[in-house]
Length: 167
Image (cartoon, rainbow, N blue to C red):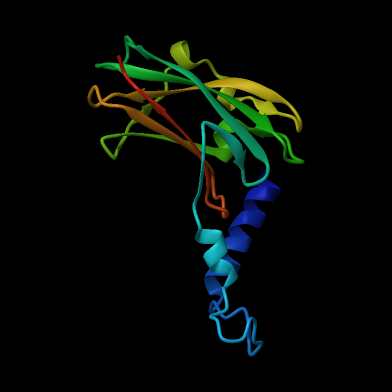
């Protein structure tokens, strides 16, 4: 895992040092502007409630329920999702995914209460295996909640999204 993290940091640093000119005197499709590789990386790909992030990690959002906790005031949303590791390394969902939630276009806080979420997101998963995980968010209103999953330090902009309507 450390090896992957170091490689990601180094590749990010190298991209940041580039001047963005990938053609260096080569003409592609005369008469049109050449498309630089960086434009493709920054393009956001929004998927439905199930998809593959970075070509390596499959996420499928499932059900969600409104819950309360003895440790956190207010209503919470407990979101169930399935994480599948299709990479070549053993990883934990919480090390390679970012799960964010929004109400009215504003990010809401994620909280950690193992009595409600369990610890599956922290467990290492060998390649080719799946595990049911949970994420917990503090609700700010009664409006719909959009939950997004992206790859931590992902460069392809892929995203899995599901919108939950509160009752």
